View 1: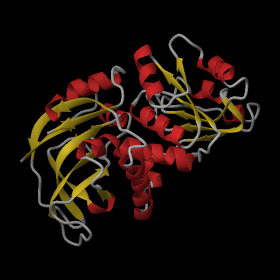
View 2 (view 1 turned 180 degrees about the vertical axis):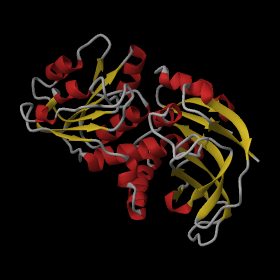
View 3 (view 1 turned 135 degrees about the vertical axis):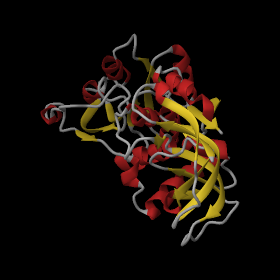
View 4 (view 1 turned 90 degrees about the vertical axis):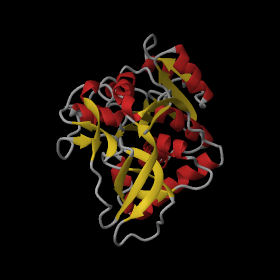
Length: 324
């Protein structure tokens, strides 16, 4: 039996239950991993609430973790007991130990700790595809990053600055503005007291942005279009304020023949070689110290309810990790 956080019915943070579950030996193609650090992401709340449907109820929550391989299933090659590994998986990560497909697991280099890996695999690989694949940011670009002090925003701002972009970030408080500036934002907009569209026009002298990275969704998508240059790209990769419904494609033409995309990490890591390339790029910039992964909260797995309350209350900045 191993400790895990389970969801038996969809709902608020209170539906997360800390309990003991049986764990069979690893099956064919699987690794058994003793987890040392578990990442917390906003997508975890989508599955818990039912905004994203799990394959079945009950299920174990969580989508990223790091740990040590303790056993290997039939047919697995390239891994050995004792290997330090990390992964992004569709559910099952809020547990002290689990079985995970070897195909989605990557070995950790010496320069990346388990805590950092758990804090960055989902967020960091998301940033990699946002900056290099959804829209390829280049030196001289001006970009807008919503929620710039969030877990993804702080990584994205640093990495975009490393690529030579001018980074504009939106945040909800002066405290978060300070964090965004420290992460490389050249300009910070307090969206609660400032109109971000007007401020982008002012900051850019009317030139606007090549790309907007929007993990907020419903509350920001349409206004974000007005922050783009002709032929600009809006990348909506999250729905913190709710999903975007009934989007009018006709808006894109008069606003400058704009592009809109709704990518997911699963698409960009569907092939093993893609996963290894994205993870390798992330490990390189983090291992070199060029991009730092801020861990601003640590909690025990048993405290998952309070962790989710803080996350949905927008009380968090940077990454949160849990330990068994």
